[in-house]
Image (cartoon, rainbow, N blue to C red; front, top):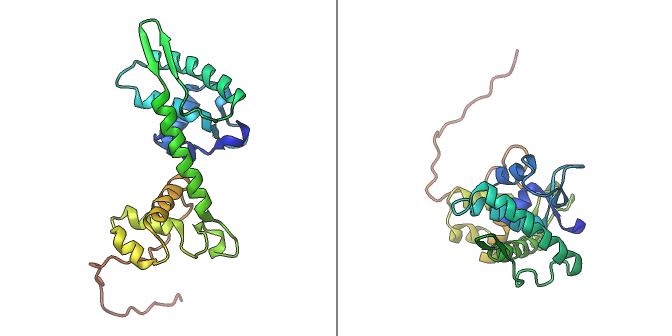
Length: 215
């Protein structure tokens, strides 16, 4: 489990919740202590992601007290399963728990986290950070295409066709993985200017401005 520690942003992507939700399960101690660490920056175990997803996405069906009780039961099952077979076949296991009159299954949340985790791993494999390439900014492996530029282009509504036309070496799958990687690893500092300009963009001012020198 130590090898499966995720940053809060990564955990949010795998659990299918917001970053605020991930921080909340730590701050409010919703998760058992063994599923996260705050010793050297916040980290969340991959195994906790189904529990995080369950707590927030089952809120309409179950009370907070019921969800906390079930998380305690589910966490025991997860710990025992991972000690025996770390993540091997965990998406196909029976994760149903009976609690008095309730019968609740964690299986949909485990399967979802397993799928999202695999996609995140695929995104990591498609991206490289090399100090010799754009100062270490994340780029698509084998190119100089910045990952966060691709994600920003999607975020502002540029069509996939226009983005892929601007980067002929990329395909739909790579674009999807770039967006996922950027979500799990947000850029720091001031956003870069987009290298893809919308077709409808027009100059706001068509004149030269002379910069005044300070006295």
